[in-house]
Structures are given as structure tokens and as C-alpha cells.
Amino acid sequence: MSSTASRPPRGGFDARRFLVRYGLFFLLVALVAAFSWMRPSFASAANINDILRTASISAIMFLGLTWIIAAGEIDVSFMSVAALGTMIVAGLIQMGAGWPLASAVAVLFGLLFGCLNGLLVAVMRLPALVITIATGGLAGSIAAAIGKGTSIPFDSVGFVGIVLNANVGIVPVLAILVVALYGIALVLQDRTTFGHYIYAMEQNRNAVVEAGVPAGRLLFLLYCLSGVLSAVAGVILAADLSSGQPYIGSSYFIDGLTAVLLGGMALKMGKPNVMGTLVGVLLLASLLSGAALLGWTDSQRQIVRAALLITGVALVVWTRRKTRAHL
Image 1 (cartoon, rainbow, N blue to C red):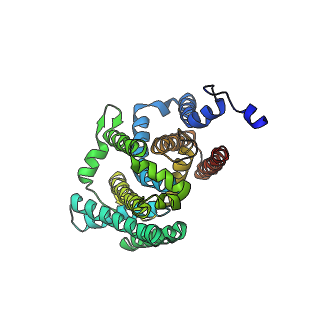
Image 2 (cartoon, rainbow, N blue to C red):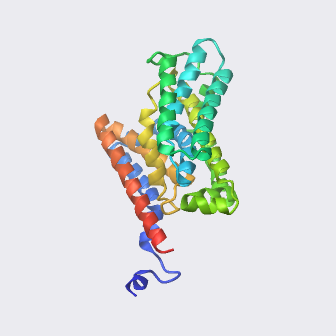
Image 3 (tube, helix red, strand yellow):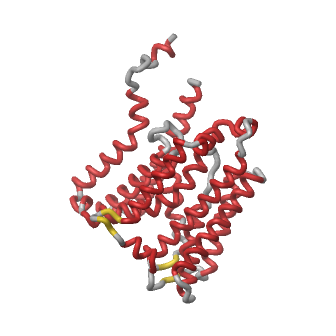
């Protein structure tokens, strides 16, 4: 009786549900407003351009991860695959190869690692966390071996650099391409059986298999996609930094999980989704930019990142329990 009384009437306004679904959007707006007030330079055209460019690279890297977590699995190799991508590009450019070849080889290695993860996790049903830790370690070791433990600088940024540095007003062309990519992903996620199967796998994979859905092949595809997108992000990072960085992946680990899990609260009530990830990426990019302008130390920024990740995990778990309790 008390449970029924505590629910809003049908068609009524549920303030708590509204806050959970749209709170991340409000937080982003509040954060941008606060930083713009404390440091007016935060709202400058140059800084906005830099935030959007940084967020775009992260958004590409985290898109595949979003759907893997939405399907009830995990991939912690994405950032190492991106680091490997930067080193492959840098190594081949230094050897005299052109950007098209270097980029293609980097993306091919991303696909290979994605297929390896998919084979071991989706086909052989091995634990995803252990497997992707191992494959991430392998990718990171190869990246370090290419440069013998150091970065590889280069001068030419090729066609990737041209795209990276192009702007429409204050908006990077890369950001426009990422919005288009996420728009396509949103349609796939919400308007096709592909997206419905992803969320069904997280709820009950065995039931999905019994219904005749090729869950193993779908999960294999998601891991392949994650590997490819991580490598693409690595190629763009190489052009952005004008170097290959074997250890840069570690800085994206917490950010990736935070953007996906915290973004999972947006719109879909605890389910990772592409729109939530995009907002989460913008939130983190704005936070890091504002923190730098305010003079926060690296340790202070890491504390905030960790706190956001813990908050994201806690909210996702809490929301899922509440949702399932009412089923």
C-alpha cells in the first residue's frame, strides 16, 4: 500500500526520475557557467575550440566501449589500443611511409585486437575483464617496444592534421564529424533491432540466445568496433600531438569509464547510451579545461575524476536495482 502511494499518479510528474534522466545535462550547463564566471577566458573562442577538439577524440574512443558496457560486458583495452595506434603511425611516418598507409595499418591493428577480444570473450565465453586486461597489456607492450620505451616525434601531420585543424567558425570540423557519427549511432541504438538486442543481452543473455538472436556474433562485432574506433582515435591523437605516445592510454582509462557510466544516467536511467556518453565526454573535457585555468594540480584533477567515476558506478547500480524492483 505504501509502495503504491509513494509512486506518482499515472501521467503525473516524477521529479526524481526527471532529475536522474536530465541531471547530467544540467550539471554540464552549471559547470560551464561556473567556470565562465570564475575564469572568463574559459568561454573564449580558442578555449571552446580546444575543448570540442579534445572531447571529439575522446568521444570516438569511447563509442565502442559504450555499447560493450550496455551489453553487460567490459573492455579495458581500448586506451592501450589507442596508444598502440599512435605509435604505429609515428613509427611508420618516421620510416618514410605516408599518412594513408600509416593510418590504415594502425586501424588494422585496432581491428585485430578487437577481433581477438571478441573471439575470446564472445565466442569462447572467457571473462571479459581478465581478457581485456591481458590484451590491453599486450597492446601497451607492443606500443612501448615500437619506440623502445620512449615517444616518437614527427613533423608531418598529413591529411589527418588538416582535418584536425580545420574549423567552421569556432567549431572544429572534427566535432561536426563526431556529431554525425553519434547521430548515426543514436539511430542504430534506438531505432533498430541492433540496439534493442544490445540492451536485451545485458538483461538476460541466455534468453536472447534462446530467442534465436546471434548474441555471440553481436558481441564479437561490438568488440571489433571498439578496437577500430580506439585505433582511429589513436591516429587522430598522433596528429594532434605530432608524436607517438606509448603510455598516453592510461590518462583515458578513468575518463572512458566515467563518461560511459556517468553518461548512463542520462535519458536511459542507468543504461549506457551514446547520447549520455557524448554529454559525459563534454563534461569531463570542460572540467579538465576549467581546472587547468584555475590552477588545479594533477592530483586534484585525478581526485575529481575518481569521484565522478565512483558516483557514476553507484548511480547506475542504484538505478538498475530500482528499475528491476518495479518490474
